[in-house]
Image 1 (cartoon, rainbow, N blue to C red):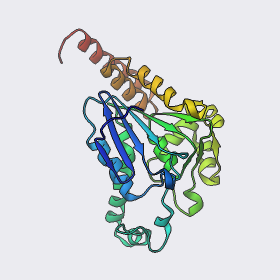
Image 2: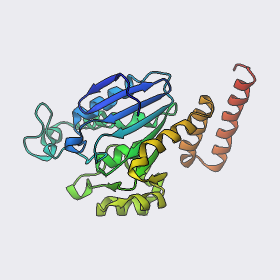
Image 3: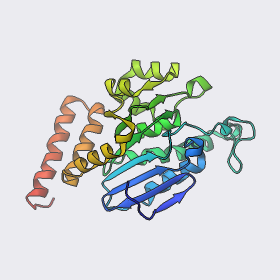
Image 4: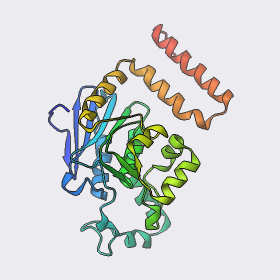
Length: 263
């Protein structure tokens, strides 16, 4: 990736912007890019400060692993200094607990915005929260050493960082249930076969492959991409007739825009 002055660089997250392309990099390779509330706040901030010129977001990580998931210190009684422990969160009222989890989810949800196409470049381990961060992106390109696993259920928890919806959408209910409940590893080749990843390449080709994909994504006019993404994302929630109507409305907007005719 190009060397650019960071727009944001804090708590294991660096954001750089090159005109229409933003790169979000996880920058704690010594700890395999484990995740914490501080990292989630930084990721959410990256989404908030993203310039309006950006069309494609590339999410990548330094080191051998994309992200090994939660910082295991969060699971200890003492937790992470300066952060509430899991026990502290559990003792809060329903509204407070819901708000805390919703705040964590903001780190992931902005990557699905209709005005952006997000691409995760995944190498090595993507476990738990790391798996869900990759799932937060629209597209996933994986190195041949990629290993996905959803370990929350084996810890007595559930995947709650926005990962369940895209996982079921990608692989179906039965496969998603099996992956989550068993906590098994899904390797690169299987990830592509089941639709979890778009493409698998040798590790040394990962950055170049993502760069080529990014260029292809930018070739189409922005407004057409935004409309197309909105149509596809909403398709499963609409009936056939509702989707036909949504297509007509979107195409009418595109035709009028191309003809220079306002609403």
